[in-house]
Image (tube, protein in one colour):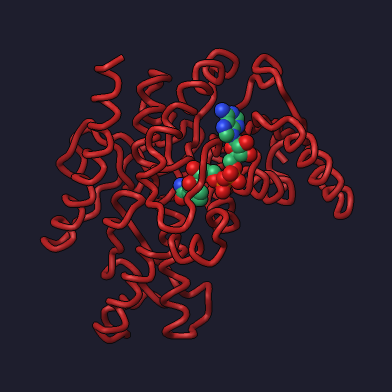
Length: 315
Ligand SMILES: NC(=O)c1ccc[n+]([C@@H]2O[C@H](COP(=O)([O-])OP(=O)(O)OC[C@H]3O[C@@H](n4cnc5c(N)ncnc54)[C@H](O)[C@@H]3O)[C@@H](O)[C@H]2O)c1
């Protein structure tokens, strides 16, 4: 267990599940929790802390209410916000969650000057852009979680088609965390063989469709909120990579600066994660069709960013 502190703002479904997942991994010394709902924060602290005594994990869980008590974190995860309800797109959450970012981030930066910030709140790519703008941090320290989740959804749907061993499946999804996400078929593999070579085009089309609707199908079943186990586990993987300086490549949302031919926009791309956050952006060679899909995904993100910019101009 490293002597590191992780802070989580928003202790709802994703935040609480992330706390539990991290506590069971015992990869940090302390997890600080903060939510506008103080009773929820305390309840989650008590329940998760008590759970760690069952299997003797050492991670300390702390409920905080004042910004100054939420300090010196190495990583701060922001899951505060409103989740989707049936019929809503992630984009419908834009203004409400952007306002929440504005209310949270200044104190996060003030009291956690060295932290790497991981954004989970939706619409993900636009919220990372907003967080970068408010925090004025360099792009390696403000990272969005979505690509690992979308890739795990794709792996699940490949598994449903092939029923192969779960750990033999590798998937990669780039672009924005929305309907225009870009599942990379040629890079997605089972036992090192591209799924192009093992599955019919009908099966591949249905995997792509199911992956894009992966979040919405859970929202439709739940009716009261959105997915949280897979989002929490995906965020925990990012935290582990940063704390343990693993330098592994994961798809994460970052500000592009001419990579993939775009700048001043946030999108999911392969990055090397390590102690400094995003240590490098990896440029995959995309084929013409993937480039076209990536472009339309970027355009959808730019539309949301432009709404944020317009709103800022009016203030
Ligand atoms: N990036 C992804 O892949 C992904 C996946 C799942 C969920 N999400 C998003 O994550 C967010 C959280 O989802 P959830 O299911 O945990 O929702 P939730 O409603 O269960 O939890 C959100 C929590 O945020 C808290 N909150 C709201 N405003 C706050 C503020 N100003 N300060 C502190 N806390 C505040 C609420 O009290 C609540 O406890 C949503 O925006 C959801 O769309 C993103």
